[in-house]
Image 1 (cartoon, one colour):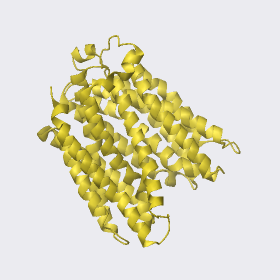
Image 2 (image 1 turned 30 degrees about the vertical axis):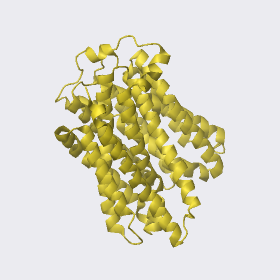
Image 3 (image 1 turned 60 degrees about the vertical axis):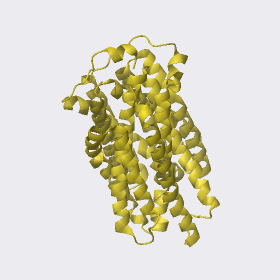
Image 4 (image 1 turned 135 degrees about the horizontal axis):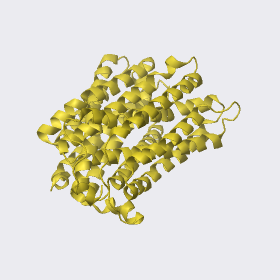
Length: 421
């Protein structure tokens, strides 16, 4: 957001519920497309005959590309200020990329095709997501309305995750068939969501600094770096159990058949809890409410570390409570970032470009650190070794609890500096 945009009247006011829905709806297809890539594509291309090592290498390269382009897209968005046009430009990239990814011609499921389609999908996703998030920060100068804007967007995103997780098994007899039909449903939802953005106002934008200055401006803002540090530490803590939950359910709880239900419960609880965090942030402030969510996560992680085989109901309660805490992580940090952008000045795209870069880096670090650590500790997936299960429970629950404690302590220490006028 430029200084001119900050000085202009806010394009969205309290009570604009239809416009909130029109803006937030795009969160659904963006989450909808992300889940199959992370969860289903490795299995799909393994079924097509590609080796796991090749698939893993391609996914790593594509995810590096995905993270690196976000700051540049954010800076370009600030230069041009055409949030809606950028999202419209992303629609054909997302459509062509996902259809090409999930509909490979017979005998052509090659490494080159997989990489090419992933690069196209990630380019479209980043172009849409960075500009959508920056647009949300520019929609209002009212601090509590910003939280509502983010909560609506993340509520639609959680709905997209649940649908993308549940529908493939109902839409086809095989994974390939279900994902193929799912991709066409995605296209319809994406087009409808993009069309809804026509009704959403945009903040006026003046000339931004040169591209290099726009790209790095956020990195010289003290409040932003303080908030980003807390976000990164908390995000790694949340990403580790997300990477390990299927192993934990299958080997520690001995309940692999229920993993889908647990995931659905987690995301539904996250969506249901969003109004609570919006309400709490009004009463005690965004950062304190976020800290309360972290404290809940810590208690849940500690409890999860005590579970063993057959503890199905306690883990269901843990999924519900951790999903509730997820709502705080989704709604409050981006809203706090919008407040920081208003205080620091500069383009919202640059801030959200680096924000998304760190978010994606968290996912890579979580898998890159936790899986080798588990192997070093002696855990082998599917084994009955009790020592390996203890190692899995400790890394799944203990390490995130420690990291969340560190994030909470850092938030408490930095909150005054972040919120200062």
